[in-house]
Length: 118
Image (cartoon, rainbow, N blue to C red):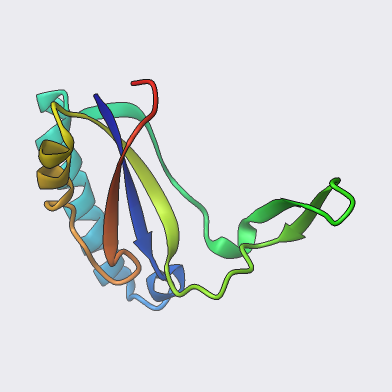
């Protein structure tokens, strides 16, 4: 079964990191993928997302027509910054793998959710 690993954090924290700290985090992420991709647990199709200020949100307007606004205008500190798809036997295995993700400034939490129809 497939699971989505949603990586949450405050993307503004990422921009305050020194280049050396940013490189260290990227090294840890590369090592994470090097560990899990050969096992067949990481499915192609994940993505790192651009910062929240590049987003647009579409909602239904009062007349039922779509209304587009810039950015996610929720009062949130954490937003989804990336998605990794996993192929696991069950949610417990997916959670064990997600627990090894290198949390850092800008990436403070990982949510695991089953993918419908997988």
